Image 1 (spheres, one colour):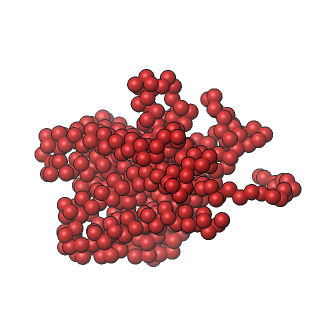
Image 2 (tube, rainbow, N blue to C red; image 1 turned 90 degrees about the vertical axis):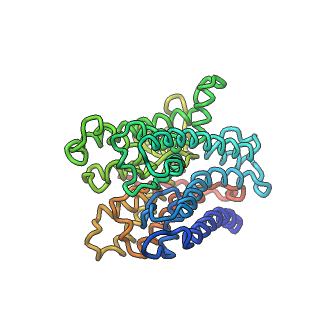
Image 3 (cartoon, rainbow, N blue to C red; image 1 turned 30 degrees about the vertical axis):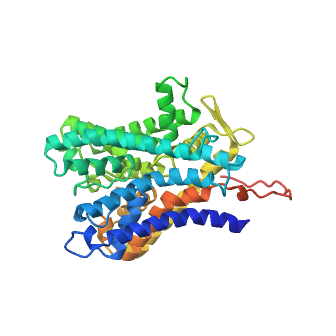
Length: 442
């Protein structure tokens, strides 16, 4: 039984590892690299992992890749953004793993409500929604870039639209999006793409049904996701505006201060773009950024992190307490003790991954005085949350530190999902009852 569980989860790992390795091999080709110095195997592997895990951390400037190399990165990003969602849906509902009651619950909790539908039709819907949103963003950005005189406006807008919706953070500009810090239209398009990609396909479908009046009310999951998304964006916006008013935003006019604070709040949870360099932020702001990166987006989305719903359950359980059976209620909904236990399990695993990554970075980079304690912690959280924000540390890391971040990005994107995956053989009948024991707290 355990062998079956390990085999099923190994299939998921193997699938994504294979794509990363193929991507790294393609990026290593002379036709993909245009830099003065050789790219190197490790840097190619790091770039491919960052793209597939939709992270955006880079060890070499993306502009140094040729158009062929940038196209490979674009395809890896698109696969990474859709890979977990589509692969999980098809895998769980495949002929080998038929849609049992257990798998039906797994699909429903991760991605979709209509588990009785054809899984391939569900995947087709996800692809159509993705292409439609990315196409809309591409068209607006292309017109704006052409008006602004941006080089290769069509390819640049396509690359950035896909990167933004997939919450990847890769940019074809060396300064990320700093050149657009005062452009309301470009900034708003990016924020809409980032937020849309981070909501999850369940919520997008639910919103479209309510908007088209084929459904009267939003599902409980959608309401929680939208509430948490709004709260986190507004909380981050107010925090960054106040903390950086006379610091990183000191030289910006008032409208640009507001726009920079709002964009920082949106991009910090999932995307990894920046309009103001992260190295300019104060320490309190860095702490807020790390909190947002750790939380991430919502279930079934292109974003990483522990997810908004996980944090919602943890916060509500801490504030409201639980019923005798371990459940809690909020806004007309009852969250079971099993779901709450799973949320805390995800939090513990996530904190363990971040802590181990941070300790490894400290061990490997301890002698490098230019890498501060906060910089390395920021890097570890960004890699786990698959965000991609950096304080300029990534490119100067040593080989072992790069390998550490590769594993952290992979764990943040694929690991938590695989650990949480429930398959029919996961359920083990308990034939023995053990006495209930109490442990002291506090």
